[in-house]
Image 1 (cartoon, rainbow, N blue to C red):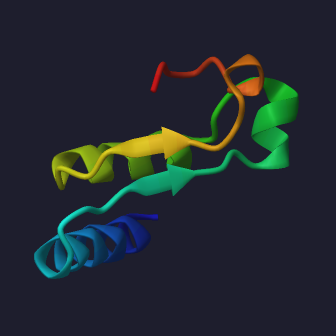
Image 2 (tube, helix red, strand yellow):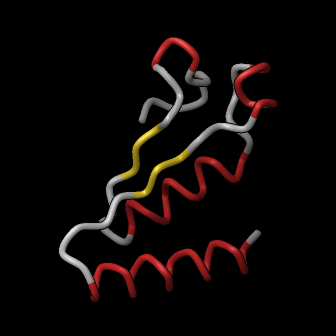
Length: 71
């Protein structure tokens, strides 16, 4: 997972250098919707986006968003 997060960080920083606005959109996996909890990677991705100054949003409606964190 660390390699993927490093690649995401590099991609987000590159995108921010090229365009005026970057937004990360996260969609929970079916497993996350069914269990009500995010998988560890979900929060890690949101954290990398925050560190890069990129806002993150969820595609799931608020009533079905897992309870692990409040985005």
